[in-house]
Length: 80
Image (cartoon, rainbow, N blue to C red; front, side, top):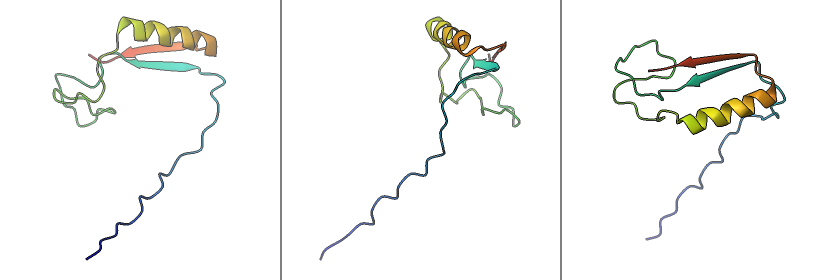
């Protein structure tokens, strides 16, 4: 008996465009871990969601340097 499997479907990729400027940058510094589990949370943070770990100081510094190059005018730090 021979079995065949269906070929893997190709992923659907969204169109991409180069980022030339950025006005606003949000930092979710605490990752997705939170002591609350609000149903309205836009990143689904909760005490058990470890999808994104907290940012390190080195990560933040690197992103701030990149943001300065792109001309960011507003910075928001959230999480925790």
